[in-house]
Image (cartoon, rainbow, N blue to C red):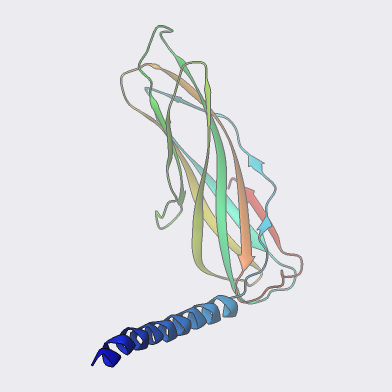
Length: 194
């Protein structure tokens, strides 16, 4: 009997080890079969500064991202957009001590899918900079071009502190092609306002 008690854990261990090896093998097959090309980045696009006030605390800036290739790979394109946003608050009353909260988010047009929100309290006279991003829908197969629309949503959360927030922002897009490790010929990405 002692003999059986000693070997039982070993056989269980072998069983789990073989299952783990199988799991690792299947994961690596998935990883290697899904090749992607290198990310291609757009030139940073800087739009006009935006002013938010307690009377008009929200703004939504539409953005368009286009990926084109001179030779179409007819493959799926995945894309992402990032925005660098800097906000500076000037209170109407310099003795105001209540800090408003500034929010920024990138929301994909048409389906309201958004990336992680950036938010921060503002201090009079100081600038706050945050980077936000969102992945764009995967349903574009590269023909002559792929296009996505997004909105850069900016908001000054109401709290009764009167003042103005000046916002400057820059957006950059990136894209790659799925199922090939080579970047398509003439692959370019451009971000602009419509």
